[in-house]
Image 1 (tube, rainbow, N blue to C red):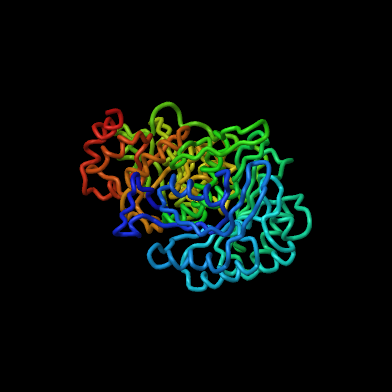
Image 2: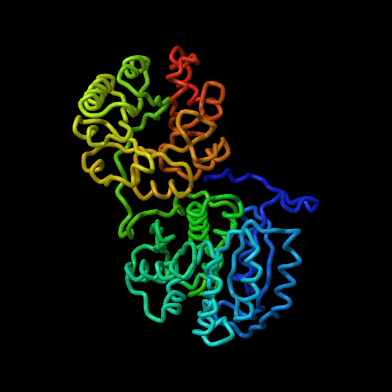
Length: 505
């Protein structure tokens, strides 16, 4: 589910759970670029109250770790118990552990913990030094005890090679490695591909054993971006604490990382510290979600033209086009669910012909083959439709494409297709069709408008005459309506012109 990110949160000491709480169980980085210090920076920026369980104190700078003092098991236990009841976490990020007894202690705690667990198996510092106390194989064997409690494991390729005791050199190796860890009990895994240097794009791979996707972003100049793994995993943890689903949490965190690298502060010629800031909202940082590795940035679908999409009725039959198109509606969608065969084909053919007479932009919902066959203007697809077809057929036919989105994961997935417009919703509660997502509200719609700066944006879900003006003020390019048009309960049909002009006010 997608959740609305609060624009302001405060922490009341009399009500310790007023602000979402996340813990970091990790080592201290004296240079401030990684470890507990970096985790707490991320939590603060994403409006989560951060608590820490320090497992080790390191003396380090970006080029070297000069000393490590491991914290005793007794002290680690005391840290967790001191916060357990008063500051219970919604999510926990686990980083540097260091020795086997620490693992046993944390596993004992997690047995009675209901939090989401993100485990970043930090074993080697950016400078190359080992961060665990005993022999590598013995340490890795002990980590198997922790895996059944982990909702998300986030190794990079170097850590993955250490786990498997072999190099990772291909996409197939990455996918195979993911299954290796799923079989050992982790609920899902995100393999970070930043070290896959021969790839044009930086690509991560996520899987839970039954679903999977690749997450691709532009690759920036090669440097030692100190702390990227810690920051990535802590941004996921913060997003989970805020109530985002795991897939969207990963996308949000990737945006945070991409922005941090893009605006990184150089320390020297080879090293930079990631920039920290609040909620990421720049489209340039939005990753591409794809079912296969992304080799090139996708080609954009044809534009809908300079004229705004405007009031965008979604109707279920040709007769509605006959009523609406003479009123000046310039964009409309035909969404037929109760016809098949010849009846369906004739309804779509007649509708396309009528829309052409009025120079209207008619989008056919789902039935893309018929839209192509009868020379239609465009197609609109939902997320489930993307699973069942190859959108390249629509692009090759020269049609426009609109895609429905409801959360960050779905937006990133659509971003990988580069449609003609994006529809975001539900903005308000709607009974037009069953929804598994909470209403997003005006604040989140404003955020989508800021983030999706190059896309025509259509708002949908529960919009009517009473709230339409507020929706237009967000700067959307179109407002889609279903029941408000077809129910006859409102005066929309008599006021099409005045309602459409709200967009320019």
